[in-house]
Length: 481
Image (cartoon, rainbow, N blue to C red; front, side, top):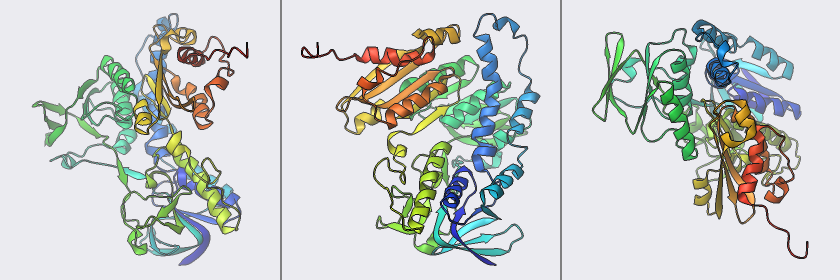
């Protein structure tokens, strides 16, 4: 079987769906190819179920942190109810609702494993083993996401460890869990399973949340330790073996851990076997230009081939991938119809924020919310940097929010332009502070103008005023007086 569309999208996660949707809205025909569930990793094994799993314990702790509400909390979490609520957010791993949306958006679906098999051509191996060839008049978009890395530790694979997928499908909580890794997934799921009653040990090779401002990992680590997590920083697993129903893990500090289950959260890698060799491209992460076209070995764009989301490894976050997808779908339609392409920085057909204003929330407790560059990254970029810190707990809104509120805010300023290039908040419920910071960073709003963005009192947003006061408001010149 062979069919022709304007755009063929490999991968029907949030990124692939958005590429196809924008292309269709731009007047093109589109088909998506998916070999698992429509909606992708985020909907079923990452963002959505993990946050649903974390929320009940976070809500309970929030009540315990407010006198008057604290006295009403008389029991522990209902583990079965927490797991059932998690499952409800995945629609019990059923994508029927997503299929309804595809149909309403005018996007076709082909189930199966898609591989690039030639110029503007994708061959799909369907679930029954048949092959179907899809031809694109204008573009093929690789939106295949990534998969978890399982490190080559002797005996680890034989021990059948969890990745994020198995952890977020779990129907029972293990008595004990060893988490290998110190990034976002490791930190969030270590906290989640500790809250659900598991004895959790974390092996963190370097530092916790190493890509963030140092105080973020320090504060999250302290909170995990307080909740009973055995946090071992600077320690790695060297071997694993099954002992009955348990896993015995040898560590490079000479210690041994025996646990019921292991969770591996050591990063992500590209999806394999995408067929790119058929068009003289290597596998791995796919470098792209600013309009998301794949670059060949000479650094030149392949006119018909796009890589969007995790596949290009620019900013491997669902919301950043969807942001890229909107730009990619729009530019594919513009090129197909001979309309102008705006590929200037911050233009409609580029993803500039991937470099200068990426956003992320780590849903640990305390939360970590960040946008733009850390202080170290800004310095490495050659900027004249000034760092302004403020105790978030000293802000009236935070003190009202929770008794003994502990948090921290950091503003990173490019002194030459007097604009914010990075912001990090750490504390309970700081996610809601992030978008204002994102606007300030992406909009390159001058500090002088930010004084006129007046935060309401008494809210946690008052931290903006305190940061600006710490930075210092310029006095008017003699002439202005």
